Image 1 (cartoon, helix red, strand yellow):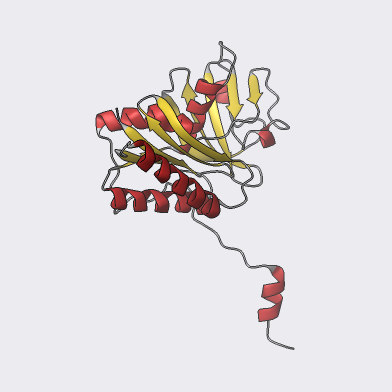
Image 2 (tube, rainbow, N blue to C red):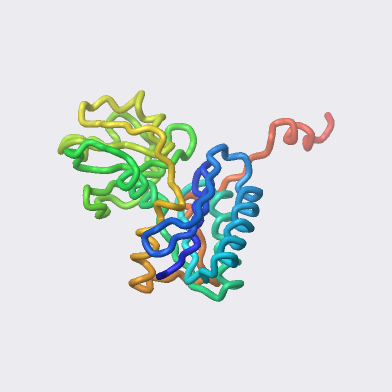
Length: 237
């Protein structure tokens, strides 16, 4: 069976898993958002020890491709590329919002009459990275950076029940008042939920170019300078 090394770092949640076919044989998760670098270093060491001890050579590395946290995505992709070069295996890149959607569908009970699924990643203020899928996980509306107001998703809410979930959905509760809007809490993307998606990609040989692959940031990174630093740089009067 195929063994895939799976890495998910697109939000504050940091997770790593090893899958063997459809089964998870190793998993580590940290939801605190403290340090993806430190977490992944420990998780990877433990995972590689497991691989050697149990003689299960890795066939591919799968990583969340974005959108999401700029820093988190870079950390995850950098590790994935390093593993691919070191192990001489292909890279699989999976959209972060699709991972969140698969997480909900595989791990949670949700209304059976839901027409659309809208995974969301917090993008600060009232903005979210979001996409819309149907109940068969077909992409209905591509990923976008949405500034959320009461009418943002009316096109879908007017047709039936829409599920909103992911760490970006919490901020939407206070502004979206449609009776067709259902908010599901505590859904975060996980490496374990990448298993079926990673296996599907492996079977299709849908591999990313290890040398040239970059995460899908959706928006350019914007660095800010603390106010005290700005003041310190001003010339004396």
